[in-house]
Image (cartoon, rainbow, N blue to C red; front, side):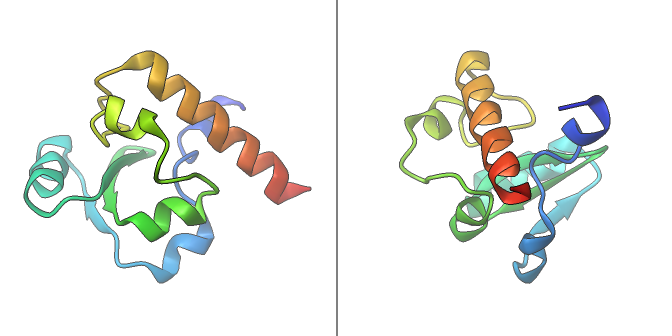
Length: 99
C-alpha cells in the first residue's frame, strides 16, 4: 500500500451510511472517544470516531483483542505491534474487496 492509500486505509465509501463523528484535531476526537465510545481512526489529516458496525464494514472483527490493545485508537495506538496487525488485516480486506 503506497503513502497515498495509507492515508485512506481506515475509511471506505461503504461507511458513508454511518453517522461518524469527524474532527480536525486529534484532541477533540479523543475527547469524543472517551465520552461517547467507539473507535477513533485517522483519515488523511482528519480523525473520525465510528461505531462497531462501521468496523465490520471495513472487513474487521470487533472481538479482535488488538482493538483493546490499541485502546480503540488508531491515530495514537497504545500498542504499535497490535496496530500493525490491524493494518495488515485491513489491507487484506481491501485486497479482497478489489478482487
